[in-house]
Length: 122
Image (cartoon, rainbow, N blue to C red; front, side):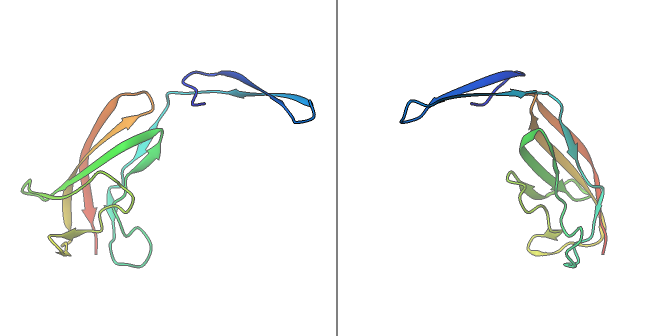
């Protein structure tokens, strides 16, 4: 089951020999969510902070779009599994401040949009 509301749920089972078991689990469903959007990353392939990756709790359907300082779209991803590696048109992006537009669906069922800036540091 995929419960939509808090509550206690029981399961009952009967075995081949007629043995009977019952168990109960109580689940608390919240509509709380949080999203983390970094403001700086360092794509220098040292394994630390190499990608601009948006993540959180209670969120899904994330779309990330990155724009350069002139408003030209340079990155878009609706998977958000790898994140933006700082590349621009198949070459290494320069150290600069970029704008992002992040859209996602939260556990409350609503779509949310966040905008801001991220700094690519070398």
